[in-house]
Amino acid sequence: MRSSDLASNESEEHNMIAPEDYQAADIEGPPPLPLDLHEHKIKIALNWGFILLTSCIAPLVLYPTLHWAANLEDKIALSVASAVLGVSTLFSLGMRTWELLKQTSNCRPATSESRWHV
Image (tube, rainbow, N blue to C red):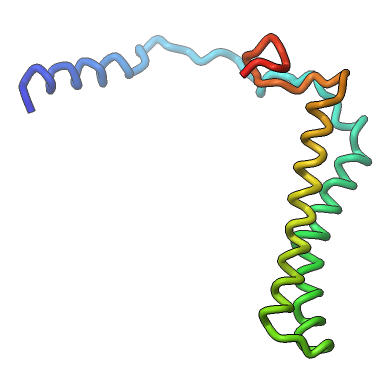
């Protein structure tokens, strides 16, 4: 390493140190979001319920049931239990696509002015 590189690194580190008289702004928390979650309680509960059912509960119930009660091979029992995981993925993809394609949708990238901005 050259001495000029070391000097520039030291000066950058010195610039990153807050001055002694620096006082943080009186911020009580993050800025408020323009969204009231109380209006969407049922939708949130239904979505999380579906996600937990198809991703956690159903595979844990299906595999032992299919393997021991139905006497299926491991390969087939795991295939059926894994297919249930795909249902939740397709459901999420469908819901996101629906939200983007609705005429009244406000879904868009954070810094874009148009919903079709790429």
